[in-house]
Amino acid sequence: MGTNKRKYVLIGATLSILVVSLILVALNHSYGEHIPPLEELRPVIAGYLESIPPVAYFLAFAILPALGVPLSIFYLTAIPVLGRVHPAIGITLGWAAVALNMSLANILARSLLHPAIEWVIRHRHMTIPKISPEREWKIVLATRLSPVPFFMQNYLLALGHARWRNYLGLSMLVQGSLGMAVMLVGESILTGGLGYVLLALFVFLLLNLLLDFIRNRLKSEKSDKQ
Image (cartoon, rainbow, N blue to C red):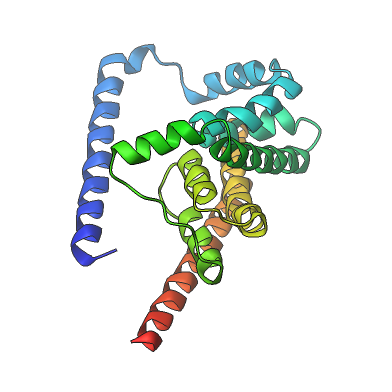
């Protein structure tokens, strides 16, 4: 990403955060008195999540993100619904649902949804080149660490013919770590504890170090070729 593009992305992100913050302040000023405190909301939300059948939730987790439903919704609620016996079970089942979702999106992109996706790409004058095997792991990791929505990441990599060992294996390395961190944050919000938040921050730190390593590796390879 060039310096100008990076600057525009930073400006856009800053403005977005500012706008969202102003909206939240305005809503709190107008309706703050009618919103119950977080301590009162926690048992209500927890009771609602406990009423959701785990099997139905797991199926929704495995299917809906492939259709564009934000993955974060499931990450934040996975442990309360799937990890009622122990948080580790919720994380493990969450990983399984994400792996199934990636597989489903790959199959849909190459079969049922392929004509529709090709039509969109063609009418937007875009092309998705086939990923070369020697650069595949870099592209998969860069895509998974990008801010592109999860379902679009799946379709882009599938249409680029990323091989399963990288499409699923490397993707789970990133999404598994990120997903665990967000699941732990969701559990901490509901329980009001800080232990899981600290662990989640540690995972985010490791991901950031991984991203820096990949960037430096790509820069060094580019310099060597020049």
